[in-house]
Image (cartoon, rainbow, N blue to C red):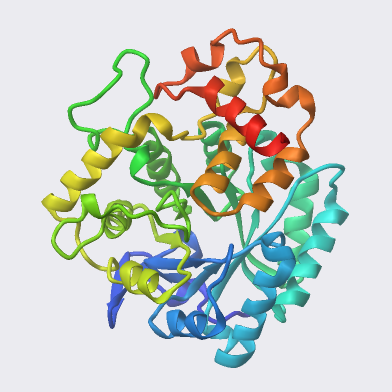
Length: 386
């Protein structure tokens, strides 16, 4: 049996959190890994000197994928392993289930990742963007995971989920095959989907995503939160929500980490200001003033934000890819990833785009948050197909 640094037995199950320097660390479910409360997203990574400094400041978990930067994200992490030591950082990388995938294509993808990472093993190997619960229990996926684990190339199994969260997370818990789930979780998930109530006096009172996170944690599955700031590294000026010396982005991270079922919040830190802003949120409680600022921000902007629950797509008689289209719009508008969003939109068939829209309004009647779905998908068609 392969032996790895930071193995699960080294962190007692009851040790839910600990602190070292300015960084807090939490146990990543049954993996037992002690992971920094703030972790670094690799799409994209910061420049080399800042990357090194972020690690020196206590971040020990880096999230990447075979597709980030055409593999360059993994190459940079591989360089980091060589310079600071493989045992200093935990890495999560991912493979896709796209097109005519099979067990062999998964293995080839992972071998490519191992080569770029310049390592013999991956700490958390995840399915990228799991959307179909049946794929989680597909024997081709299970077989690839088992082979990689037996060969010592994969320590723990995980998945990231961008949409259809309820079905995917329930299946991940039910099947018992996954150690880590990575889900989009930010202050816009503070509303529980409801057709009966359009607005809430206390936006922070309920959350469907919270239930799913609690379900995973109750089965000792580690939870990594992504999309925590909703904007990646491209941060708008939101100074109107500032409280004292604390920015809204710090309040957003504190809100996520206030949920003790979450191990770590993934964020992209592309410059020094963002690094200082995000790392200062670790180990610090959300104040009442920050909570009020978060509530105000959600109340004022919540109707424009798609939570990717996929209810609109499931209700669409044309089966338009409404959820995926809105995710790509977010990448274009908020994350500064225009080229990648445009390329992904071009890969959709015409039947999945606004061209197939019957203007029946089923999508908007199904949306629990009042998002103007039809206007959003038409906007994407104009933006990406022109």
